[in-house]
Each structure stands twice: as C-alpha cells, then as structure tokens.
Image 1 (tube, rainbow, N blue to C red):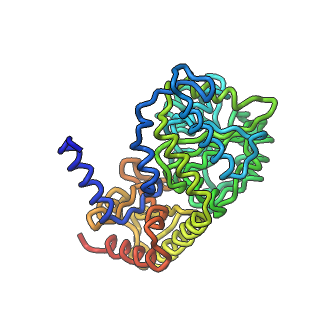
Image 2: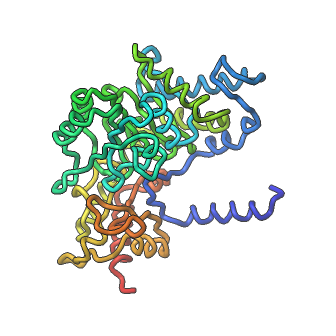
Image 3: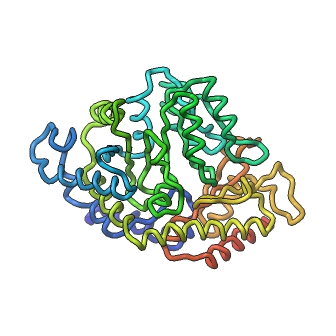
Length: 399
C-alpha cells in the first residue's frame, strides 16, 4: 500500500486485535478467504437492481454471485426456495430491519419490540432510532424477578395493542427464546412474527440454538457476529399469498438503497459456505460451552449475572448491584469504569445497561461479554475459566 499513514494505522489495528482478549459479543474474526473477497475487484462494479433485472450492463458474473449467496443462505438454514426468499443486499442490520418495516408496516404503525434497556436493539423501534420516529414502538421487557421473558404478559400486551409486527431477538438477552410461545403471542395479536437473530445466527446455523424458521414470517440477521462473516445483513421472508418478500425487496431497492456492495455479497457467500461445514458446528457448540464456563466462573466469584447465567454466547454482568457489594465483595463498580479497567489490562468488553437499570446509559450498571471471537481463536472452557479469574482479579483490585 502506497498510503503510508493508512498502512501504519491498519498495522496498528492488526497488532491491537492480536494482543487483546476480545469479549465484545457482536464481534468476531473472519477468515482470509472472506477478507480476500472483500478486497477484490468486485468493489469496482455497480449493480443496481436484482439478478436478471439490473440497471447497468456488465452484471452477468455479479448475478451469479448474488444468486449463489442466496442459495447458500437458504441451504445453511434448511429452507426451501419454494417456501422462503432471502435478500442478500442489506448493508448491515439496521438498514435490514428498517427495510422490513418500510415494506410491511404502514407509516406510523406499531412495532412491538424489546425495549432497549431490557436487551433489545435500537432498530426494534426505540425513539432515538429512525424506526422509532417513523413508526410507533410498543415496548416489552422482562419479568423483574426472573429477568427472563414473560410470554403471558407479552401475549396480553400484543392482544391489546395489535401491532403490525412483533420483533423478537436481542442484543443483551442471554437466554433462548421459546419460538412456539412467541408464535402464539403473534397469532393472538394478529401480528407478523419477525425475528432478529443477528446475535445468534451462527448458533442457529451450527445447531447450538433453536431455529426460529419453523415459526417466523420474517427473519433478519447480520452476518458479522456468531455467523463469522463480513459486516452485512440478510432478510429472509416467507413466500406465500401475502407476498412479504416482494414488498421487502422493493423496500431494500429502490426504497432505501442504491447499488449493492458486490464485494460484500461475495464475502457473505464465502462465510455461508464456511458455516455449512462440520467444523463450524463444533465451533458453535464450543461457543456456548465457553460462555457457560465463563458464566460459572464469574458467578462462583460472587458476580451477579442477569437471569442467573446464559444459554448463548452472551453474558450480562451486573458490576454495580445498586452500589452494594455482596459477601464476596463483587459489585459497586459502574459499567463504564469496569470496561475501562478491563481494557487497560487487555480485555475488551462493552459497558451495557442491565434490565431495570438505575444508572444512565452512558455509564450503566453492567458489562456485556461474548465468547464468539475468542472461540474462533481456539479457546476452550479452561481458557475461559482463566479469563473469568482474570476479570475478577482486575475488577477487585484497588485503584
């Protein structure tokens, strides 16, 4: 690279990634093949439209790449192309979710989604997101005692509000979702069932998390978290008389996006092929084993875990506990300070609100941990127990 400044910065970031212990739940490490596709000559091609229906010439090869990505996405999740359609053009998760609402929710209509401070995502209708400005969010949360979903309460809220769409999925909820019960909630409310599986898509692909596809009408996902691909997104929608897929395709293009990033689509295709391998199934299982090992270690050291543990790659730790330290001395540390202390020691996490948090979002009561990235690096349960001990040591140290 001739640009020495950028070259040095890239080298510095590579060095940072190499030496850090990465516990960011929404990050992972892609293969060299994925990076090669991202940096390929496909970057040069403009391809507005869809395969066979482009607005520019010279897209014969691009059409093949996009169709291959679609085929691999459907196959990976065991879906029939006669029953499901997938759009592989969304640039990331937020545009993907916005495209779904644009296609199937009337302007000003209701979206029922998990509240941000309970573990949901900004694009599930939060007021600071465009999705909360163009549509009305009906927020739902967790049971305050169990810190898990209360499906009866969800059903009651849904029947009362009758939202166009009910979104399930999370960014900071460590438990599996009962898809059959969520489907009952949606049917009772006469709402579309939309699942944002961005965080656990790779676990679904690897058989380590229950699949939402037998129940959902629409499924969105990013590809860069547990799926271990580039930063991009997919939208799956059922093919039936409602023609949801056609409405969503039109919302993606020409509604919200112009030409897709063809290099990105190719990189997604590479990642989808990798995720279909037997090795990836072992990886997904190990991700969950590692999360449980880390959770058990932290719990044993006296730290309070939201919902008591995890079923996934994700752990939410209450580092504040209303400022009261338990008998083992855990607690009393704001999430921002906990994150900063750990980063100084080479452990990267993110500060995170916990359900019913009494502290502000900029300095919440907890931290969020994830095991996907370090599992990619080959770490096993014993390694994560050591990481748990180190986290405990750092957070207990006098400063």
